[in-house]
Image 1 (cartoon, rainbow, N blue to C red):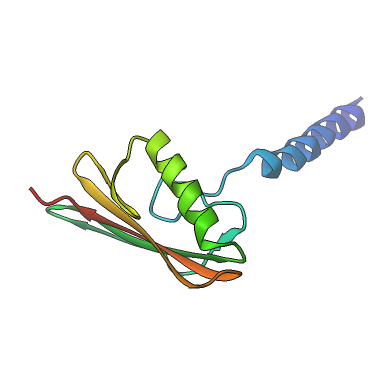
Image 2: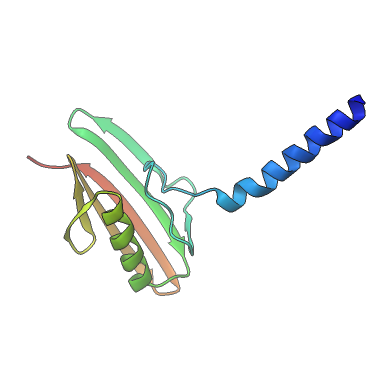
Length: 121
């Protein structure tokens, strides 16, 4: 009987582990709610977070084989849904924070940089 219980527990753990990656969402380091777009990967070691008296300072980078227009469209839609207001281009404001999403490189080899600064009064 104990072997059956252990076998069932092990099988349950395998199923839970197999399902978790399929539903897990990667987020841009330093941002608890900004997802990494499909086709991009976080650049290891690129996430920097500083707390200052004026607010958070965050910079992170992702890289991938996508296009600039896909990145801009994805983050424009996603950030608006998360409560960010578009100021212009890749610049957004939410409460007392200012976010810029910029791209560099060429389509197919693109780096996306996320920078968060406190909003100026």
